[in-house]
Amino acid sequence: MSAANAQPASRSDQAPVIEVRGLVNRFGAQVVHQDLDLDVRRGEILGVVGGSGTGKSVLLRSIVGLRRPNAGHIRVFGEHLLELPSARRAAIERRFGVLFQRGALFSSQTVAENVETPLVEHAGLDREEARGLAAVKLALTGLPADSAEKLPAELSGGMVKRAALARALALDPEILFLDEPTAGLDPIGAAGFDQLVLTLRDALDLTVFLVTHDLDTLYTICDRVAVLAQKKVLVVGTLAEVERADDPWVREYFHGPRGRAAAATHEARS
Ligand SMILES: Nc1ncnc2c1ncn2[C@@H]1O[C@H](COP(=O)(O)OP(=O)(O)OP(=O)(O)O)[C@@H](O)[C@H]1O
Image 1 (cartoon, protein in one colour):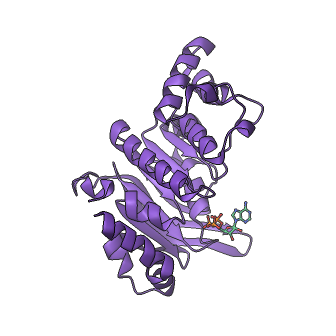
Image 2: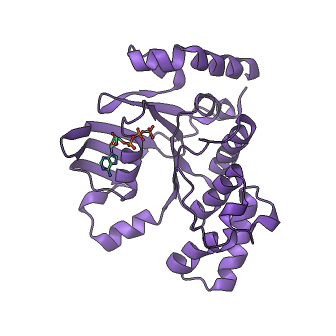
């Protein structure tokens, strides 16, 4: 049985911690989302998939406050984010940890400084306190202690992802947003990162919103999967439910050679 399936079915308590309703995102004449609805349940790892350009990152950016959608509602922790005064919204956003596609570490700061910065700027810690806590966060992500004093450019791709994850965890977030965390990693590095996300979700009681193209990630750690297509969430559910969807992209993605290989590997491990 895989680690993901080892979770009881009720691992996520069904209560949505994020509710997106009627979301519209447009860039000029290009409509990316039209009346998109999505719930993210507390405690789950939700995999968000879809073809290139279907708006996975734009959806993530809309929820975390980096893009104001053209229309719709986003409720997080029961609060309507788009209607909140900016200070209240910022307080909610501090309960998010975000790992961007390219890691987004400050290249001129050491790894430790990268993790310390949010602790100093947002949690009011002094540098020394922040340093101690940053070391804990870096250890949590499995980075060797000597990486702390290195610059991001001195780390491997997998280590950069772990350092960026440590930074995303700096302020003890309740919801972790990951944008293609295993992109560019070799299969062993990617599998290690998947297991890390699963372990941290369980240990830290996180909810995880995970944008990915990685079929192994979906089969190994995701509780549910949401497929973006036709400007909305076309289907959301367990992998078994999503695989049954009658949609050309779903068929090609899940039932094509790579999908079948990922499913077979997962079966063999179960
Ligand atoms: N700031 C922007 N200005 C104009 N168009 C944008 C902007 N951001 C995103 N888009 C467009 O919105 C669409 C969705 O982009 P998005 O990055 O969300 O796709 P995605 O599903 O994450 O794709 P991928 O899987 O390739 O990363 C794309 O056509 C993109 O070009």
